Length: 463
Image 1: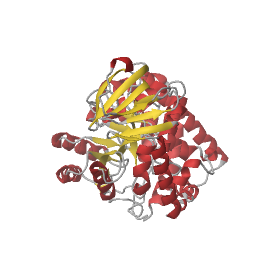
Image 2 (image 1 turned 135 degrees about the vertical axis):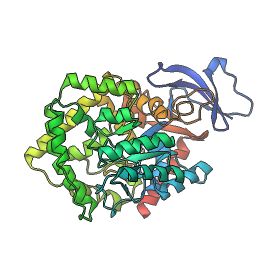
Image 3 (image 1 turned 180 degrees about the vertical axis):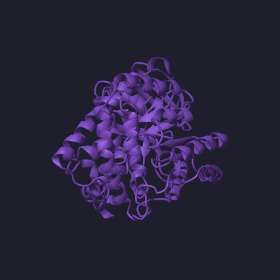
Image 4 (image 1 turned 45 degrees about the vertical axis):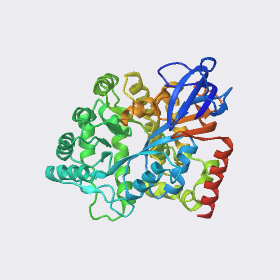
């Protein structure tokens, strides 16, 4: 039995205010009771931790990660930074193995919700040279349906990951078969599909803001014709080259969409998404990385938790993926970056449920730490700290189908909690002031957390 006493509890961010002087009783990985400290009896023999002056929030959920190749570092970093659950957006055997080890308690790690491999059109943006798992390329409706049946029969994926280059007909065939098989699908809204149509078809979450740029333009038909002209060379063996070519041709299309932004159309589109309960994961930090390279740091303290060979390659990787820019192009991407924040504010205002996701795996994203940066991006876009936290707790848990288990602190819920040294509702940057974590009912106090983080740093230095 574990008793956390005299804490200020933020039990369900965005739903109710902070509750001072609360006690949380934890047993067998679950919250047993929550109440006023004066009214809550602590059983004899319980380990009691006095949290006077501390704030307790639900364990954070990163709704968009790519951890393959980094898993030995990412697995402990997630819970040690307060991220007790992640949604892995590219399922691989490596990720599934770490998920199983964490569930058994063999390693420290988050709860993992794991996608299938990508299901994309042909040719995909991913040529296979950098892919952590083979991409399922589909060119016909029959191939799309077969891909769904294969993923469902395998049983190792929690949902199907859809990608950008699916055609409208293959996408709709995939959606129909996913409904028949009873397996959700999420991911990119394909270039060929308006976001409202994807929402109607049942896409559970839409990742990134790219499709929303198109659907909120007053010149959408013209913009879509320009996007349809973008082609991928199937003979190009390099994923980086394919992505760079796509990115550079996408930039003027998205800039034109942003400059023809239509507020009336935007309200209509976002009301549609809100009515359907379609979740959007803005991944503002990822967009910021690709569009504001002039503002990227040369070094941050948390980089020590990843191998130097990995972090030192980030700048060159971005150049390979996005190419070099003229001053005009630099100004254009800055405008785009500002416009994405405007879209997030509008999404929130219109009641579209937002998820906090980082696209960890992107250069400059450190597992766990990048979610705290994403929360700051959401607040900068117009969300209150409470609603930014909600995107990483209550709403994320609901989107993952775990709304009755994760995302809030209440009797019967999983005992995933984060102890903070200052109030995150006053300043969202205070989510970084992690003093202790409870993951699967296990308390990692301040001293143990520092020892475990130091072990990760040593492993990274030796890698």
